[in-house]
Image 1 (cartoon, rainbow, N blue to C red):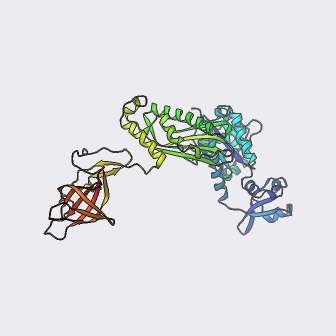
Image 2: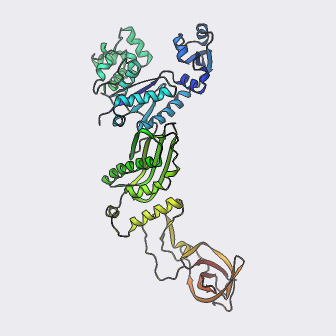
Length: 498
């Protein structure tokens, strides 16, 4: 894909922000200042102050001599970074890759994005107009390289979109400062009479390196596209992400569902080709007021079935508040896994297998909560509470098979609970037992079944288990701890049968 970058320059970033917070000072001259070497220096000036000749770097006393009505506010050195970070996050509605460009700009990788707005010019116009409507004075430009877009945004005139491969022609008439060089290099170039890049762009590299160092060659190479330039995105791009911008803000539930179905279709088609499936999904709506609303899902097994995934999202889609309208929808899959090969033939079949079970359980968890379904596998232990282990949702394989014909109860208590019993003779089942203040009279009983602990894990008295049934037909799994003649036996309730 041919790379294209958008550079946004906030001409008065911090003062614009101050005017947005305090509209009453918008048309008054003011500056942001901070102490430096015993003097108060202007760090930023608003449009009104700048037009009157007050610029960053001036001493506040000199600025007030020019403008006696000048207001001065304290400058926070961390403000630019916080503002640019927030603005970069806002720009994610236009591209998945946006990065702060200190001290007063943003860099957007817009490769493959502009066509969604009808082309690069409408795309650029939309971003600039939206930022200006929020109160920021901006200039923006598009080019093949970060360096060329940066230079065009700050020094360009007229059309702010460079033709593909046209960065060299654009840079020829720009001053050396458009290459993002430090002041030391710029002063040396000015002494030698270099006023435009075209005066030295074709000079031999050894000569330029000897005169100005490696930094000039690096910046020039980045601007021309001969050197790679990495941008640090404000949020790492999800490898599985689809975006759907809207020509008009979406206000209805039907419109939101249509957008979700389109995004799921695109994402699932891609995952199916790569043999992947979604385990976690996030559906986001970027509203026109700047707020982001979202819902998320999780699946027991990796799935790339759009119908199944839509049903999971649909359970919570009514919670999305469109506000004044949603202008961009984003579907992310932050967690994907390989898809079991059996999944591919199941959606339209009527067979009942693990995939069908996992999708059913996904629906149950979506309706009742993610912690309502638990998965267990058998373990090879005698002690009943050790004979099972909890695993991640539908994950893992059993080392042993589930035992059959052992007479185990359907519901096993997590911890055996003590009971009081009346036993006619040693090794006989109880006649009745008291549990939580209630007496249960036993009509039928079977046992005992002796279960001992594995000696290599723990030593202790054995348990004698009885399956008993009370007069109401409810069956219980009881056990006696210790043998008669070896201390006082204790009785416990450990499970209930269906």
